[in-house]
Amino acid sequence: MSPLDTALMWSGFAAQVGLVALLIWRRAYKRLPLFCLYVLWSVISDSLGFLLATRSWNSYSHFYPYEMSLDCVLQFCVLVELAWSVLKPLQSSLPRWTVPAIAGLVLIAGVAVWPISGTTLMHGLPPEWHFFLRLRQTASMLQILFCVVLAGGSHLLSINWRDRELQVATGLGFYSLVSLAVSLLHAQMPQVAHYHKVDQLLPGAYLCALVYWAWSFAQQEAVRQEFTPQMRSFLLTVSGAAHSGRIALQGNDLRGNRRG
Image (cartoon, rainbow, N blue to C red; front, side, top):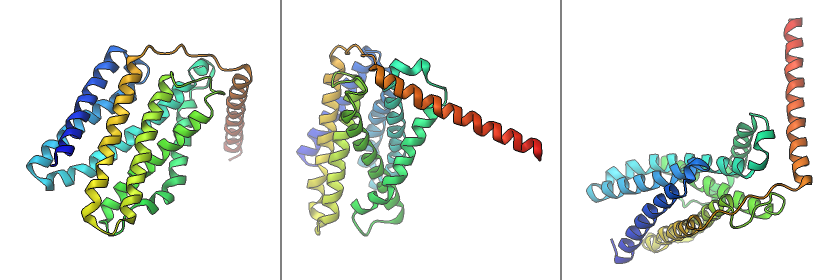
């Protein structure tokens, strides 16, 4: 392990621990429990991965795919949590199935970008590694897309860069963008010997995201603004139309069952 690798590893670990302390201090687990769980899991998984790597590289190579899969699942849950948190001004007026609907939309977006993620991987990988890395790149693309949509619709959603949701999404989006860039470079590099130099960008980007999150949560949280009347009316109309359609479908099923 080079001095730069060692510095990045210990700096990242210190930033993770500091961020966990800030999240507890700010009681962020009450508003964003899944994001807090994701950060805590990162501390545990990185520590366990380091211990396994120092003992046996074979043990770490078996641990890494499963760690990466759980990491992607948590990232998916964080995106759903952020989307639901953005709708906080209207949560009391929205139906109970809104969260499953959001999860379904994020899942549909993941299915849509899945074919694209396969083009960013280098050739010659074992089949199981190809699947796990493709899963990670799909999660990265979802995070970038989510960050762009959230930033682009920030005015309509009455949020700004001081809101926790956009801060968390920005950190995830930045790290995911670097992760995709590294994958593209891997796919284009003919010499494996240069892979490690490119890989060093990942812990550096993750460290930047951790420092940004720590700085963000160290600041006082902005008072959340209410939606504009137009946006509130639009969201309630969409949820009401979906609710009416669901009732109509249930009524048709009941009539069909009676006929049978």
